[in-house]
Amino acid sequence: MNDPLVYLNGALTPLSEAKIPVLDRGFIFGDGIYEVIPIYQGRMFRAEQHMARLERSLAAIRIANPHTRGQWMELIGRVVTAHDAHDQMAYLQVTRGVAKRAHAFPKEAVTPTVFIMTNPLVLPSAEVRAKGVACVSMEDTRWLRCEIKSVSLLGNVLAAQHAADNDAIEAIQFRDGFLTEASSSNVWVVKEGMLMGPPKDNLILEGIRYGLIEELCAARHIPFAARRISRAEVLAADEVLLSSATKEILPVARIDGQPIGNGEPGPVYRQLYAAYQAAKAD
Ligand code: PDD
Image (cartoon, rainbow, N blue to C red):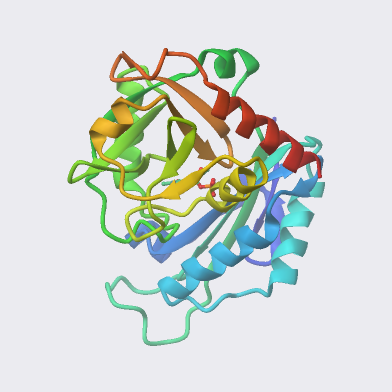
C-alpha cells in the first residue's frame, strides 16, 4: 500500500497514522495557514520566498512561528528525502492548535499543529501546454483577506468546482468587474506585447511566481505593469496565462468557450515558459 511518510508535530509518521484531535482549530474553524513549494531534483524552488510568505501568513493571523527558517528547511528536507520522486510538491500547514471550541483565540498557551507532506509534482503535460487550457469566469465571492494563504478555502473550493462542472481547468474570478485571480492560480494578461497582472493587494494571493514573473519580464525585456484589469480587457487580451507552483506558467486558450487571441498559446507565454524552465535549472 502506498503510505508515504509525513511530518506531524515533531515526528515522521506514515500518512495513515497521522491523526489530529477533532478540536484542532484548523478542523473546527479553518484557523490556519499553508504553503505549497515545488521541489525540483530534490531542491526547493524559491525556498526563501516561500518561507517569507509563510512568515507573513503566520504574522497576519497572529500565530507565533513555531520554527526558524533553518528548522523549516530541515523538516521539509526530511520529508522530501523520505520519497523517491525527484520532483515533488511540499505541502505544509500550521494551525493555531487544539483548544475548547470558542471563536476568539484561546487564552491559555496552545501549541500550533504542524503538518508537512509531499506528493509527486505532476506538471501539465506537453500536449496540454501546446493547446492551452479552458477556463470559466465567475464573480469573486471570497473574503477580503485573500493575501493570506489561509486554509479557509471554501470560496476557492466552490470556484474550482464551478470550473470542474464546466470541464474547465480554472475559474477566473472578477470582483466588481475587475480581474482578481483564479481558484488556485494567479492570472496574467498580455496586450500588444505587455504583460499585466492585478496589483498585489488584499484581493489576491501574491503567488511566489508573481515576483519570479516580474524578474523574468525584466530580464527578457518584456514590458510589465501591475494594475487593475477589467473583464473586457481580459476577454480582449492577446494572451491570458495562469501561474502557480503546480502549473508553473500555463496558457489559457478559451474563457467561457470564447477563444483568447487566436485561441492558441502565444509568444509571450513561450518566452516566459522557457525563462521559467531556465530558472528551475539554475
Ligand atoms: N495555490 N492564488 C491562489 C488563490 C492560490 O491558491 C495560488 C497557489 C496562487 C499561486 O501562488 P504560487 O505561485 O505561490 O503557487 C495564487 C497552490 C498551488 C495550492 O493551493 O495548491
